Length: 371
Image (cartoon, rainbow, N blue to C red; front, side):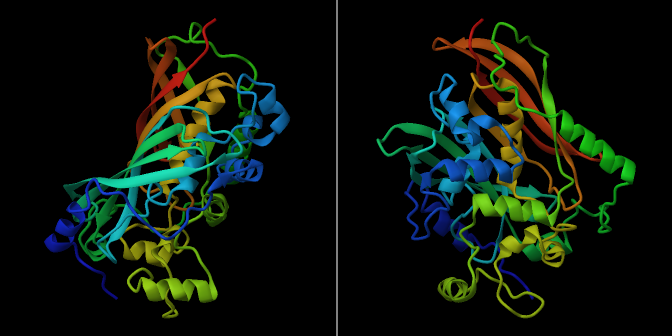
């Protein structure tokens, strides 16, 4: 089985769409963010913050409302989550988002979104040779037209055959599954027992200083169950079943390459199908890019406490996080400033896998109360 190539004609067709609103008939996973959606999304990323889970807790905070995890907005628009246009059968590798939130996302919000193609940037990559960074911008608002957030999100469009046959990024990576000792599993369990959101204990701008470390979070070891848990709350435009799925494949004939049984199945299966992941040039099934960005948000909202507000999170996904891998989410304070009367802390954030390789890198801005 071979896949499509990137052609200049297809790139030109895409460039002609720059600045034009994306129109799709496929609805997002959530159009209304109720308490169930907030809870399910939080659980899906391993986040037990009562601000997302307990209505009575939210009412007791400065927000006077139960809130949703900030990155739940991934589930309210397909494009920001990586559902890009054009280049049929050319792989779309989610690679990052620059989030800017203007207000907390409250339970009860009815979502309105609008996306448009922002740019197509050509790259030469170790992973797949010639690739294009396909960048979209999305605006998010509530039922009253109030702006909630904006996001630039991007995928790399890569030729699956080229990545598998000629790519060099994973030449030295073994396809043998990672295995942990009983002692290592016990260490992971012990780490999870120490983790907790800061909650009602105020963290103030005045108490924070440059160089302070963000409390790290552990994510993993990653499993297929992890992928299923995230999919249950994040959703995917391509995940359908039986008649509905086959009708969708009929409308989009290049969407679903055949599996080992010669049955059409969407490419999102790279996240649980090792054999198909290897066909696109990755050693094994791997996590979702938006999922890892949610993990970084989880680390920051745990650290800031109930009174903090995550106003920006820009993350670049640097490497695939395969089944069996662990990810340590880390960060540090690099600056403090007053912006339009708001006390803001600037952070550098990153994540590493079990061998110390960079998984993601980025920056964050957090508003904190004054002492």
